[in-house]
Image 1 (spheres, rainbow, N blue to C red):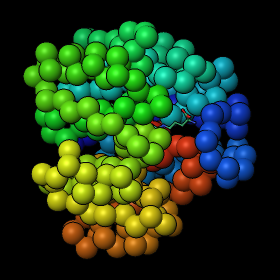
Image 2 (tube, rainbow, N blue to C red; image 1 turned 45 degrees about the horizontal axis):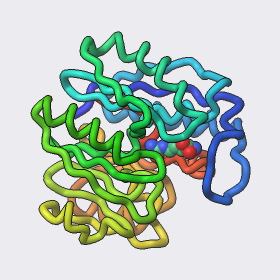
Image 3 (cartoon, rainbow, N blue to C red; image 1 turned 180 degrees about the vertical axis):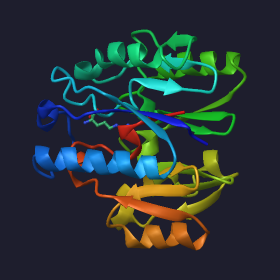
Image 4 (tube, rainbow, N blue to C red; image 1 turned 30 degrees about the vertical axis):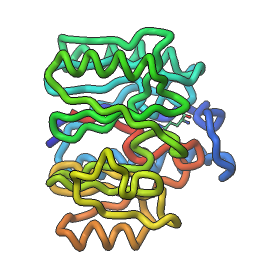
Length: 253
Ligand code: CIR
């Protein structure tokens, strides 16, 4: 269960960030409003929130999940696959020094983005995507195995990041969409399946007693609630325009 999260204020340059979808330009007022609502939802779920200042030089830097992975004992600073995001690691490394003493780093030409990393208890799954390459995934595996974790490398077919399509809810249960429905690597977990029209809701977050999920996905919401979780919905429309899911906006530990 999480005690602490780190988020980073969206910059005005956010509207010029990377995207592969065609949903229009984000509206910066709405971006800031939705980011505030996200922070409030997290506080309601019982975590302390450290807010990092915006950085205009890095339009995508509000997606703090990608430049680091934090475990109970140490932090791993990634090497983002996106050229314009590589420099984001400096500020995240700095911020994490308040919380962790031990750091590992992924080295070029290896690339890893935190959106491709899913932790299920003492098991890490890492996706091979357009952002995380084999060299990076192998470095990640070696570091984590040395630290006593199990690691499975999962090759992605379509999803942007691993966690775009799968979330761990706790209690040996996952939410899965698209290529992760009935995927052999996750067969030991009970699955809640997300219908294709609600695929975006596969990226949500179990935070202590609640599941924080994007607003506007009633079928998935109902499925999550029917197995006994409380949900909090957060409007994510402006982050979705930049390929951002709900988990991307925080580092949790
Ligand atoms: C990017 O392309 O890097 C950002 N526009 C979106 C990053 C989303 N991050 C995540 O899913 N963890």
